[in-house]
Length: 510
Image (cartoon, rainbow, N blue to C red; front, side):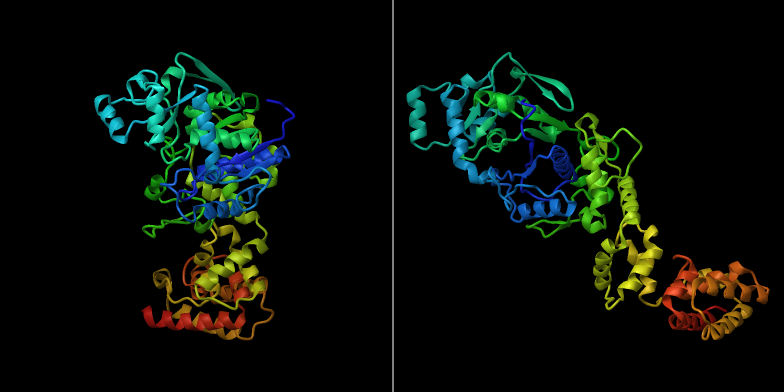
């Protein structure tokens, strides 16, 4: 391929449902390669299979890419000079090219009915339409010209199949795998144009890549067996000199490494495999996505980039701009990458820690509103986040870790208090509450010094009086430094909580 050719890559999903994380990784690698080479990243919607088309899926795909920050330069909603960007809008051109292949002897009309083919499969369990049997089946290779024309003129249902050559070795240089070879005799005569006039992936992808001047194709390893058909189509249509360079990406594997990761694996093991929530239009069932689980887009993208790629160092945290700088095809692995949900959670934890507070606040407001908490001062919320941030794996964890900052405990961990509770401790807290009502200044360090000196003067053990204090404010044995909690809650709220809790302790605990 001409080294001076402008880089143009494409992500070409089908609008059939949720966007699998493997699809997002394909989009990401396309994006990184394009941006690294000052090229163009194209989104093309492959909607030729109308039986699988799902309303809303195209918008969902674009929303997912937008959330990830890997926006296409050209797409159905942001056109360019190479449209249209939906295959269904190119229908007429596909038939023309299929007919051209028939006229040039590289393809043929096949009139076999579904029943005909089913009968063949019953007779031959490993049946495949190929050079071995094509002359015994109902197609234009086995019919006279007049018979073929009569069937076409009468509107008889038919498909157009590629005529795979016999005994040829087809090879190409994959950017990841090196030279890959195939024996043409082992490949069946794939359908290029279906009975409804729509192309199959094989024809459409070649025609579209040609007309969109695609220079490089990053796609999943599962498409590798289709490569020889596509190579022949590029050659048969006279476009071999402009055929893109290909890179077949390794599979994302199940956590145990056995087989490709699927939605069923996520359902079974309790983790998402879609970028964002997807709702089944027929059943209404919602399949949870990484976004709704509480992943930051930076963490999701970072995690995906390292599924099958690394920069050759021990570095694991990469922002999108840094990925653009460091990405290289040479560092993509040939082997499949095992999905590790615990590692994915680690990435999210690390990105939450390094994220600027202002980028998280809007999400926290939405979370709090969903819990019925409104009117929270932004500075107060920011101060709470500062105490909780390093404890968060997901954004929704904030409520579990920090709910007590926004409402008083409804229950107390009495089992933790009861073993060491006695009259002396009750008297201690009664005295402390009275003294805290006028304590100044209300700062963490001063509060801590005051409290510890009071414990020392009482002659009791510090551990036996710190835990009840925490449970009075929080409700349980968790949360950040207790004096930081008291500082944020303020004197009035701290004293009110201590009074309420002390009353409960004295009533419930003998």
